[in-house]
Picture 1 (cartoon, helix red, strand yellow):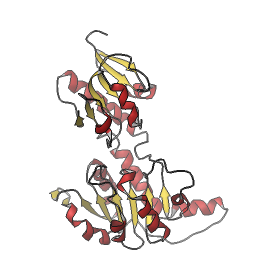
Picture 2: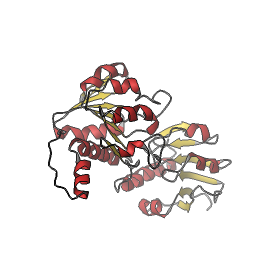
Picture 3: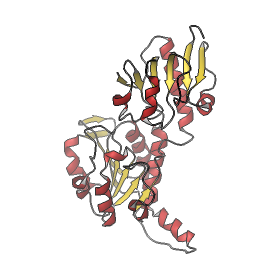
Picture 4: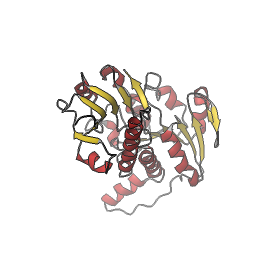
Amino acid sequence: MGNAFVLSVPDALVRGTLGELPRGVEVVEWSMKESAPLHRIDMVIRPYLQSLEGLATLEGLDVALVQSLTLGYDGVAEVLPKHMTFANAASVHETSTAELTLALILASQRAIPDFVRAAAAGRWSPSWHQSLADRTILLVGYGGVAHAIESRLLPFETTVLRLARHERSDERGRIYGLGTLNELLPMSDIVVIAVPLDDSTHHLVNREFLSLMSDGSLLVNVARGAVADTDALLAEAQSRRLRLALDVTEPEPLPDGHPLFALENVLISPHVGGMSSAALPRIARLVHQQIERMLRGEEPLNVVLRT
């Protein structure tokens, strides 16, 4: 392949999504489950949702950029071989994850699972439930995903409170600092967790956190499962004091027969926040941007780790 820019794609789906690539780019397909087809690869695109163990196949290779297809990168630093640059997929999954968040909220507020269960039993079962309109929603974590969620919540006539590590303001007003969390939780009808997982956010949602939420309020987790203490979630859900909508769990996948599955006030989706057709053109856009920047000798986008 000479001096070509070598791009490794994990499968035919990603290759087809990318379409026509710039002149001089050579593509190899590599699932990262076996030895690499080449020693030098300019950009390796990781398979979507591959376990961290797959990163071991990068050992000893000359790789300029490892491009993830996910936003989260918890645990990567511990297993990524030395002398690697790792970028996450910021800009790819915000749209899909925000859509799922709205779906989980609306389904929980308007009791869609109850209606589905009634229909499956052959029963017509009308009932009154809370709207999304007029509710106060607290976004815990205010990155790209939370910003996209907020943009979709505001037209529903809601009040949205934003909380980040440090207080600041933007064109939409105040973003509260972490020190105000205990004050904001009792004020909120719906709490959406959208923080990255790291040492500071591991089990952030614990018994104390949940105890501050108002009776009947809804917790939505679209971050990472380990941001919440599963035992604490289960205790509150079993007491019927709180409602849960979880796209992520700890452990993951949640084992068959786990008691959370049996609770009617718990709605669980199997970590599919980013898994929609909207992700594909956004993957293509990001990869094209990365290739063009690297061909110009510029810094890649979304670099989150260097080992």
